[in-house]
Image (cartoon, rainbow, N blue to C red; front, side):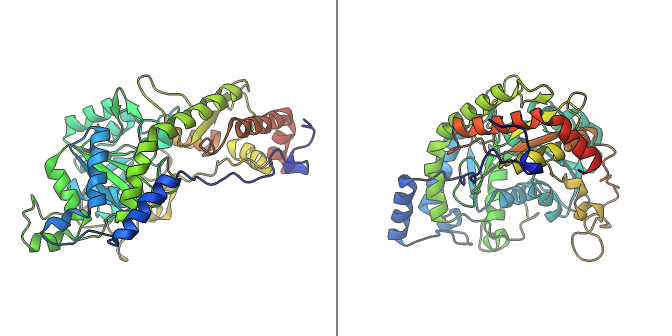
Length: 432
């Protein structure tokens, strides 16, 4: 293969076809959707105190199947993982004046779930090797205002849950796992989403298994489960029609309900989870083995006692070995027709937090009269986030229907870049 000219500088690209979309469905999904359409009832929910408060037959069957698979008392279906996070933070009793500690290296909904409940996110640093929330830094960020912790199993690798749970017990905090990217991953023999007080899965179209849009909240706590169901389904109306609630806190009434088609799809997709995990792991381990020969690239590792779902394949760079930053490296990779990401923006740099304005023009919840904290949204207390922003990049293209041949093309792209690394370093220094 001719590596003499990078595509970034006019040479021919390594890959000339687009990556295929994340299609996880087949004839089984078609059959269950047709069955629902034949019955004609597309949602079985009713926002009042009767049997329909719990949803239709597909929703209830799906919830039982997910609870059984993950070994929890309750699985609550919602219309997105975002809704699930909003409901979980609400069920935790979080409100004005409270703080919730989470990671800035996550999708925006993890933190907006806190803001929507009129509380203030506090961002702790990450572990450099896993990108997950650092338990050590979490404890440094605990204040008398702290109400909960939201660890994120980012890229499909479990956060270090044992020390996080110890911190929560020490300070009397609720733990809500954001397991959107880690369905089926285990931490020391326990599924992610089942270790904290609540855990949230995503069934978005881009996830490992999906129903288009959807989510599931896990919990073993019966009272939290009732609160979650009330928040999901117009809690204030249901309580008004006679249902007893453990508390009126955050029961203001939302519609986070999953429909029958999504529930039927979710049941089928759950049966495929292990198969998809095996296929992703095969591709990821193959790619990791091939790329580990390039000096200065650090492959995604797995903490002892943990599984990795490889929702994304994240590579770190050793700046003492590779003389360029990740953005330059990825710009050259993508010019070769490869699809990698290195322009991630950590949540603490979003305008919502930098300007501290969310609801109305008075700066609530950050400047709410009930809140007397002063959150630091600078990069000063996030050294590992700062480092990984400069020296890491990731790709989602280690999933079916990708093949070993697709991985080989990726490896060829890396070979081409390393062959021309000095030219790329000069480009970064001079701009040409």
